[in-house]
Image 1 (cartoon, rainbow, N blue to C red):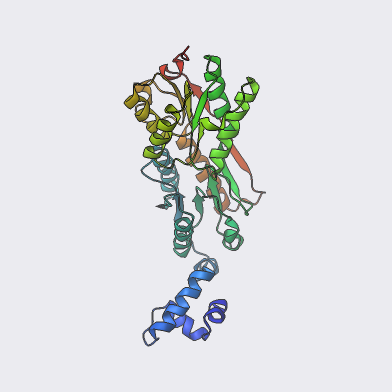
Image 2 (cartoon, rainbow, N blue to C red):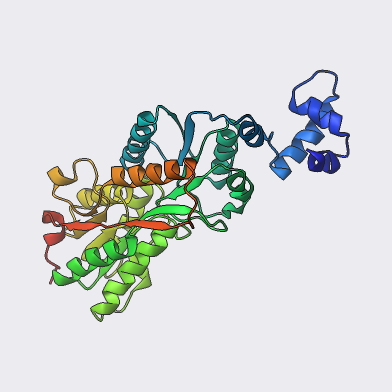
Length: 327
């Protein structure tokens, strides 16, 4: 609060009155203090007061990317089950892929004095959580590791799963294999791209940058990326879709074009078995369960160095990846 007062050029009492929404403060002063609060990311030290009272909130926070995505829905349900078993409440928020919204959600959850946080992070520096962690609020990262913070994380074998997928397509005779994936800034995208490249290198196939389309956050983005690939003078004979939403977008584009192209996706998804789509599979609920177990172990006082837990993936071959390359 002292820092906010200095930044805004007002007294500590004035900051207190603004924070507590007391009357009698001029509008321009409120705006100046509010701007300083946003810039410095100040919030009341509810965590410290909770520790002094030796109480807990009987709640944990979960920040995911998009609750509408079946992957995150299954993760959230597993974390909710773990919280319920502890007679605790889960508070969930979706960052929608926005770093700013992620920070806002984290601040809101910490302001509610949650006992711990599970976060699917955006590619930002999470060093801002050091103070809260050191004050006694554990944080576990899920699906992607943090940057700038030594903390527990529960991850998938993204690189190994992608390598197995592309190696399978190579084994079917494909040499022009496209990739449709999320933004390159995401850790999962980078890992799956590395697995794709490793499989090509192991097979002695030079990588063609024209066959890689990254940046698809939504189904429509992936559909457009696939259309671009199919419009190439020498289009791919197979496509590796780097997550479930991308895979749905690729499917739509292939169906619209009636294109005879092999397809293999990372993440199982609704109707994949019915549609015969080959996938790199794993148990999303297991990710949520492992993250919750680690978080509650920290809440209970576990004091060991931060660690990464990596969940294995497996290749499920269905008819979509068995399409032979065109002559």
